[in-house]
Image 1: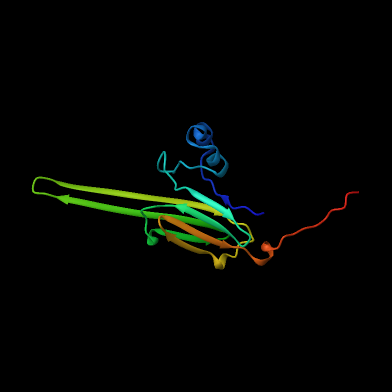
Image 2 (image 1 turned 90 degrees about the vertical axis):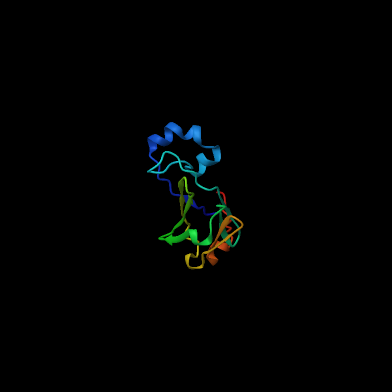
Amino acid sequence: MNTLQKRTELLPSFKSAFSDFFETPIERFFGDKFFNGNAWMKQIPATNISETENDYRVEIAAPGLKRDDFKVTLINGMLNISAEKEEKKEEKDKNYSRQEYNYNSFSRSFYLPDTVMGDKVDAHYEDGVLRIMLPKKAEAKKEFVKEVKVS
């Protein structure tokens, strides 16, 4: 079985000092959930990765976004998923004026096994979940069995 790997860009000293406090055991296994080079903490949406006989599936919980907010690219065997959303709200009254700005973004990257057909990758966003299908090449679908004689 091949695996997808998350690219981690966290300073080792920061990780060792705070990982036990911020991370669950699953997050420790798969990588870092909190940290951005410009901010102390940044929440990254939950990601599920599964494998079937025919493909790998990546699901990211990202409610409140639109299809156009996402950017999904595959570059040299690395799947990059990012989203940006900016909201501006302005209220005016004769006695006051109020403006609010909200900016949210995230980015996730995964190294893909050589068995993924990069030209067939498909993504759909529905009901707050981004689903990415990564079809396997034909040779990855075949089960390799070899009996080894013990001498």
